[in-house]
Image (cartoon, rainbow, N blue to C red; front, top):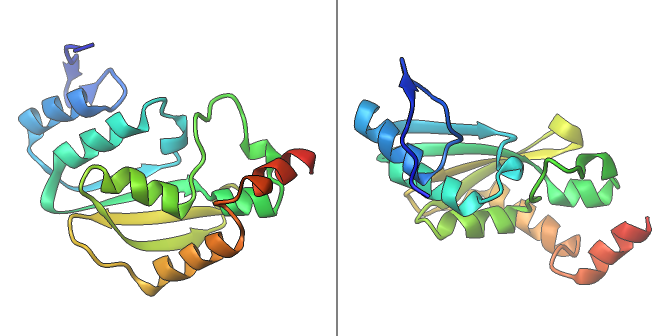
Length: 157
C-alpha cells in the first residue's frame, strides 16, 4: 500500500520503510549515516526497512544497526528478551543475509552489553569484513545457531 507522507518540519508520521525513504531522499537528499539501535527486531517487514535504508544511503555512506545477539540470548537463557513486540531475533549471519539482499556488506561488528548482550553491526556498499566479523561468525557456528536442537534445548531450559 502506497502512503502519502505527512511532513512537518522534517518529521514523518509513519514508520520508516522503502516508501518513506523515497520521500526523505526527495526532501533532504541521500544519507551519509543511518543508525538504528534496537529497532530491527520490532519491524514486521525487515526487508522493507532495509530496502529503504539501501535506497536512502549515499554511495559512500554507512549503516550502524544494533540488535540483541541471538547467541547471547540462547547462551544466557535470556527469555525476557523474547516478547510480543519482537518479530525477529538476529544472529550475525541472519543480519548479514538480510542486508546483502539489498547490496550492503557487513564490514564490522562490536559486541556490547546492552540488553544482556547485543551486537552493533556496521554496513556499507564496500565489501570487506573485519577480524571481529570472522570471530563472531566462528562463535555462532560453534554455538550451534544453525542447528535446530539448540532452539529446542532453549525451549526446555
